Amino acid sequence: MIMEWLPIPVLFLLGAALALTVNFPRMADRKARLATHADNVLNIAGMVFAAAFVTGVLTGTGMVEHMADRLVTAAPEAMGPHMALVTGLLSPPLTYFMSNDGFYFGVLPVLAGAGAAHGVSPLEIARASLVGQALHMSGPLVPVVYVLVGMAKVEFGDHTRFTVKWAPLTSLVVPAVGILFGII
Image (cartoon, rainbow, N blue to C red; front, top):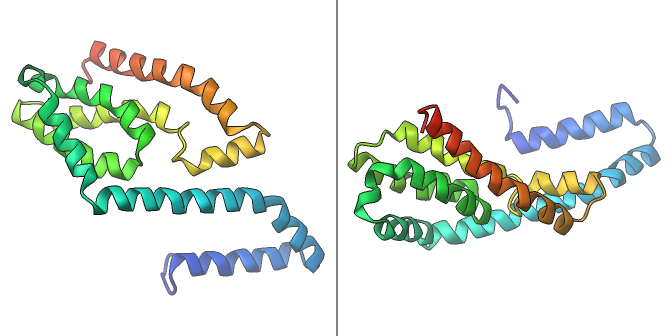
């Protein structure tokens, strides 16, 4: 993989086939091992394709840029010097309902530009943007969540109902601490 003789996905497939053959010489054992992980693989593959589709539609149609521009123009001029705080408050809901790519490559540069126009450092905006990750990591656009709830034998809806109670609280405590310590 380091030498990049072939595309990484091809190398991964070849390596996985080799590892399965070496570790499980009997075909029945290989089939059993693959069947054990099939649910997780299919869930993640489906989620990755769905997230890629949504991200492609949002980006390709210009919706991300339009949403970012709309957010900036909707903010009162007096909020300009507080764009880091605005970013911290917008980060949880936006990263929950859109992909990280859409937020960090589409919305965040616009927020950083608006902050820079008011003397807010892009570093402060970047720090504030991370506030939403507590909520994002429990959201429907994160494939690993499907693996974890599957392994824990928990329904995704039950997981969401539990985490959505606590993640927003975390998303409020983190920027408060950041402001207290002068990081944001």
